[in-house]
Length: 574
Image 1 (cartoon, helix red, strand yellow):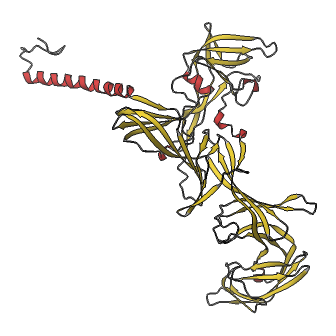
Image 2: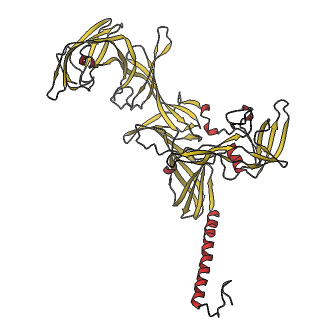
Image 3: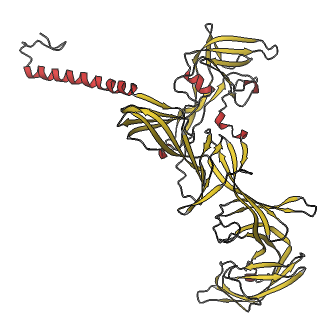
């Protein structure tokens, strides 16, 4: 009797019994080892796939610097044990490393973020060997011809890549489909090379392609039944800014102030009736953490539609008659041939303004060192949309108009320059944001437009500027343009130069500022010397300093159509 084919009989004098046992053990072990991967693979393939088509509820928190936190609640029915949980319709700009699964009774084994873009190139690439219907239209006569064609090739183009480290050249993917080949009635034709307008009808969608991103998580549930699972993750391509409008009332003291939160969603996901919050402040983050770059391939027609046989022409860049159009009928998809992605069409953004007269308002909360602005009603933000929500409205905001000038003492250092000449002051509006004022709330940084009424009663823009984050009890400073009615003529005299013990230059000089007011109103001008001069000492001042302006500053009152002199002596080291 032979135990193993090809081995000697048991009674052979050349085979010991212990050798037979060893061969038997090896054979059984090898058989088990070969069957083990197949068993594991079979179990993986048979694992239950639980699909959640959309979130039951979503919350959106937008941070500064191109970042948002998305929190989704989904109700799923899970079996006990291992299963594959698939969340469809997650954000296409998801940062996979930030995914957190909460409110789940079980264990997470593995998670994957998949986004196989549905476009012309991917349809052809995944349909090699399949039969499609070509619809060809004669541009002159309008005659339509339908032809059954088999896709025999849709190859990805290659290009040469030079590696400067190894000084070698190797082929690498070009990221495009370099032509598609059809078999029609036993003959071969290239894609879009018939000279006619050509569309392609696919009878079904190839496996693995989707027009929505998917997040799949392999889990092991401790019990079977329905669960309300919460997933949260970060995504980029979100932004916000504050936009202010200040309407001056003409009394140089009061104005109407309106503030809007401008929210930009540059992703393919829409948020319907979603709780929305805004985080204001400077967020410290690593810009290496970002969504993976997903780039759709293009189809290139390897023929010569423009009488050129040298360079393939991308159909997205040429003929407009090959515009994309997807028409669903039955189980099929008809798609003409330009691979344009819907999610990349940021040029069709719309601007939606809400809160103009309703009950929607923004409530401000403290959030550590940041400020959180929570909109008290759900908001709908569509894909690739800019939306504005009012968060501030004050009809009696108080402000103070000032003229400012920062003094540069470089002319005092120059032995040959006796004066700076005429300098224009800067116009500055200071909004009162004290605790007992009309505004009395933290104001996030953003863009400020200032309006005033002309003599004919019409409202005109008088300036636009950026404003910084402003806390309560600090005035919001609005710097506009230079003033041509309020100027300062600075003259330096009695200059003296000497050397210090460390051989540094010491400069002494008399400084005189003649402040000229050519307007019809009494004004206040702030003159300030920045803290950039070493060992600066000021003496012999003609007016008292104002510590609110700065360590070396003055507030000077200048009557209408008059001038006022401010003089002092400086002593500093270069």
